[in-house]
Image 1 (spheres, helix red, strand yellow):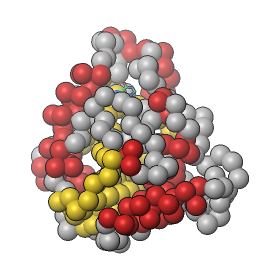
Image 2 (spheres, rainbow, N blue to C red):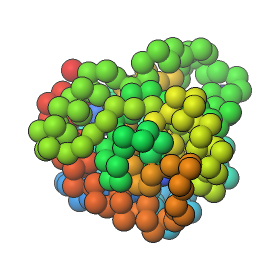
Image 3 (tube, rainbow, N blue to C red):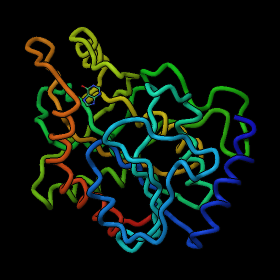
Image 4 (cartoon, rainbow, N blue to C red):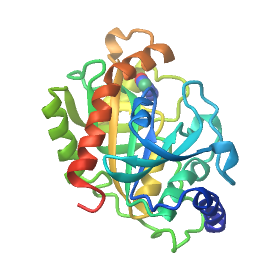
Length: 277
Ligand code: HPA
């Protein structure tokens, strides 16, 4: 991890040259949640390819732009398109943008993703407010020599997702009359969807949903001292004894159905709690 700081400073300088505000919230938009980007009044936007040291998106359906502007009266940085372990990025590389967000001043990270529902009570397009996670990557963005300026060697993970933000999100979902659950997200590398035996195993381990992202970014954010809100859209139902085929299109379609509610929940939480509450 040593050496990252100098790179982050260069990326930060490139952003600051074109955008003078100090953001308090960083948002990572996952599969099908683009509509939230449309709610941002954009003051500046950056192609990932133009930002020094930034990775580049390789997945269809994930653009590669960093948006800077305001949402719910907060200065925000929005990643339109995220990086995944299965693209070949190391955990440190794919969490690099979180380091940049933190260095620019973000205290709160909002992450969204699509996931397969393991909990039999979940339905397609339900929202799961992430309460906790299980790291099935067996890898960490914190491997290597720790940079104490970025965060502690052994970060506490007793509450990686801020309890008051979980409750605020649940309240917002109830206010919309939208089905939302609090649950445990298991991060699996992908890119293949899981087998029946893996879904069974993950349920047995205590997971309510499984996806291919989020865990690395949340570990980096907690290490950096940020508070986190994580929202997941259940896009397919993982019922190992009567499993149907899953494809990327189905995942995108189910995520799209939830995106208006996701958008409103994020805006409601930001408006209600703000970055420092
Ligand atoms: N597994 C892993 N990632 C996913 C899934 C799934 O079933 N659905 C959407 N993302």
